[in-house]
Image (tube, rainbow, N blue to C red; front, side):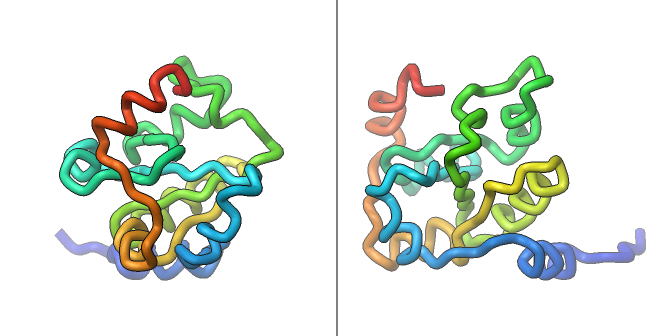
Length: 141
């Protein structure tokens, strides 16, 4: 099977079209209450590596359904136009693609973290176990 456009080209195109922040940029804005971090990693990654306190976990495979108010799977946490939704994955590839998709859906208050959770951890960003996160975020979904 021949592929006419590989993943790298898709990621590069997305990176050129979406707002990208460093982990440090996002950490500096956390306390202002103007952003909502969105972890799009798979639950196995969350269980293995932990996540960012206060983020919303939205698996990449459900993201489009959770942000669309017309979807039976819509999550109200995504309905705040005053917030900027900052997505992250492990390395920044999936989050770039996801941010591009949300922009294509008409969402303009979306960005992603360059380097993803890896960059976040290396920059000393707060991390908590997924078990603790689930306990604290119960009811926020």
